[in-house]
Image (cartoon, rainbow, N blue to C red; front, side, top):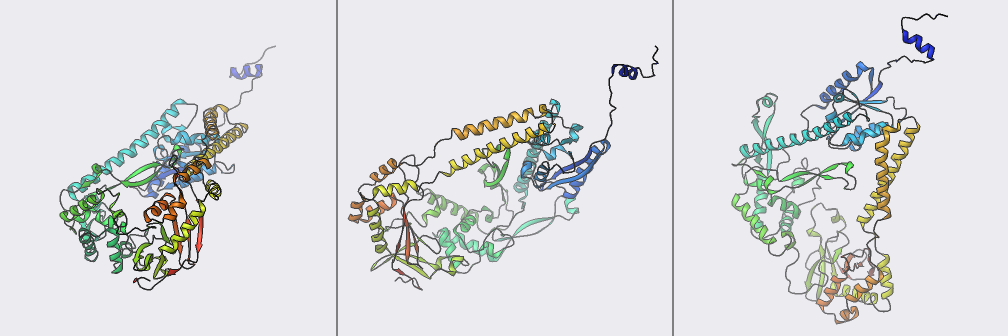
Amino acid sequence: MTVEISNDPWATLDDLLGVEVLDTVDVGIGPIAFYGRCSTEDNQDPETSRGWQLNNAQKFVEPLGGMIAAEYFDVGQSRSVPWERRREAGRLLAALKDPNRGWNAVVVGEGTRCWFGNQFSLIAPKFAAYGVDLWVPELGGKFDARNPSHKMLMSMLGGMSESERQHVQARVRAAMDAQVLNEGRHQGGRAPYGYNVVDGGPHPNLRKAAEGYRLRVLAIDEQSAEVVRRIFAEYLSGRGDRAIANGLNCDGVPCPSARRPDQNRHRLADGWQGSTVRSILDNPRYTGYAFFGRWTRRETLLDPDDVAAGHVIRFKRAESDRVVRSRRPAHPEIVSVEDFTQAQLLRRSKGAGGLRTARKAERSGRPTKRPYLFRGRIRCGVCTRKMEASPRAHGMYYRCPARTLAPGSPALAEHPPAVYLREDLIRDEINGWLGGLFAPKNVDQTVAALVASQDTPSATSGTLETAKKRLADAEARLRRFQAAIGAGVDPEALTEVINEAQAERAAARAELENRPAPNVLTDAEIYAMIDSLGDVGAALSGAKPDRLANLYQAVDLQVRYEPADRAAQIKIHPASRVNSVRVRGGNRTRIRGIPAQCRCSCDGP
């Protein structure tokens, strides 16, 4: 029997051997999603940036049968922000879980714009788990997790992206430093109180000048500049920050946020504060010289226990070597260099006198002729401010005058013209309560109440919640990987991410099982603290002001007086002598029927 051999010898042989050969049919990539990103720091129009990135993606996938079916484009997002915290990228990640999303691949216009640092290694396994391919132009095709060259190249692209961002930041900062140093150029932002930003002529860059850009310079606003001069003059005469602020409020001078609400939308415009005066006194731009870099942006981890969550921007005081000053005056001066220097020396002399800040020297720490038992311990229930001592011929009072509130404060609507509380009445009530609280027959009940009032320290609670969250996330990822394998995904493609999730699950479980017990006080420790206070009854019966003041300090006595109810809420927080832990909550009581004095003037009761 003779068999005729066709022109294709393999066809005859396959037929004899019973081998079925499937013809390769190229169906193309099919529907695909596009992702791109444009930062606000880019010198590009977002629409233009989206256009060229989308064109790059289309030229890359259309010859392969790809068709853009969905678009995700982030505007105003830095590349350092993780995908989960970007608006459109987060939507794309959420769409992965939808089986009816309408696409099974994602293409980007430029890899360095989409991934930063190690972000790709954290994102790619999520796409692989849902069977979604990633097409990257720099790879010349789709990413293959089993190809070590692809992994190495994507790691290099992330490093290049991070390096590019850092180089751009360094070049821009160096250029701005040079402009301030040599030209005294205003670098934008809100003008300091006392100045306005005005047109300074054509831009020195010819290209920008041709496009209509103009220089912006600082010019004096005489009305507010006079206020700045008054602030410096009063401070040099010996007045403090809060005293100056109170004087400006009494004279009806609008505060910076009230004068320019368009520049201060984040402020309440509720009057001058001590911090406002302090910021003016510390601003060297009033000398007429340009300064730049006094505040710097610093990237801080959003969650130290989860580095993959990325960083957030915080503004902090810059180191002195990072601040740049112009070589010559850049705008009209409001305060002379000599007066500004004298003000700074005066502030430092106050700080060198044993006080933490000059602000503290204005209201506390000063010697007094007579003792005040409740100094800094009584607060007004209407405005929550500390009530000040007000000696009278027939007794000592504590008062809270409404006239010292900032104009426009919400508390003015309910605050009486003046609130008075007599010292001897509140003292007798407090001493009676404390005496009964620490009496031998009641000390057991007091200790039990203090033990029950303790809260778990917030740091321990936060760490516990973070560990639980990591455990739940690791277990959820493992379930998704198992489901993906059950749906037909190659197990080898998920080996690395499964091992990583299992390691994270084991670490979280170990942290939860081995976490230390909450750092709270036992009843024995509280008994020891009470014993360290000595004989509380004897200290109360002696009624010596210094001993009473020491006792109130030892138990951290706090009083909140409600003038409408003629009642005082009293709370103690005994400080621990063990590991510097404070007992939270404490015992409290309310004393009713305390006579109060409210007058329309400040002449006293």
